[in-house]
Length: 358
Image 1: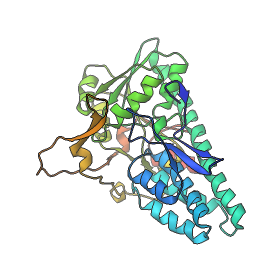
Image 2: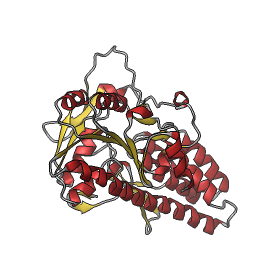
Image 3: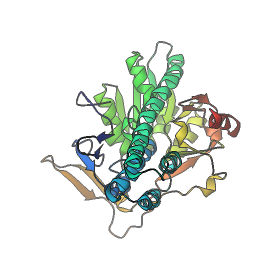
Image 4: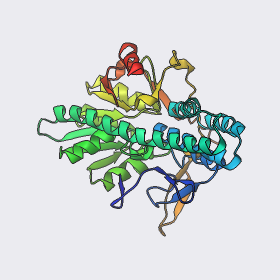
């Protein structure tokens, strides 16, 4: 998608330099910074510090991490070591584990060095291309929902966090139908939750939509319920960091409350995901590890000062205790449907299981 009228992806391979480039999302929307990943340590830092974020993008970055680890060490043991280090970065986003396992399972690690290096790179690039294709398909399926809902009137969409192209390689999950709707000239408006504590809705989703000339309004996280009561929301759509095989959704903290409010007000609540976000192993939602982030994320607010310089300021009393879970769990009975790259399905075990063999 576009930044200042120029097309970008969130991550790409530089053949001349044999490096990987990313958009440093900790600098957006105030500054566009392209960072080069040259070794495994750069990848670990980018994931941990959220220079890149979003489950599909984390997965793509993880795949490149295995390539960079082998490129710099030329040791097959380095791939296994790198895989374990990458898995220990962020525990909740399932695409990270999916991508690492896919590379290890699909690439013959007994290959000669030069060929192994090529295969590792090819697999990482393939994951990126497939992610773009998956998001486009999500956009096409989701657009049909929007189209049926529009009936020649404006559609008011509420979204949470950033499940846009900045959370994937391109197009996004929850935003893909929005971008398709724009291209098809549907009249749409997006309510953008600011999404504390990192404000990924306000900083990233609104930034994306502005660059695509899509009408949007930033709201506080607690304003959604009021808008739903007033009839100013036609549908909710989010992404997910993990969807269990029984349809329970793990997503940015606050998603559960939005789903509850939507259910109470008879508003459809959709979750847009590529099939790579499905967790086929975990049976009980209580077994999902919910990442707890640094307390500073709640206490510090980032923005521009009067001189245009990016600053962080503390907003809490010095001795206040802070609890900062990054995700919550939304039960499947609150979800209208899952919009996947393979079609629109109900958030239940029976429908989800059909995706495994497709």
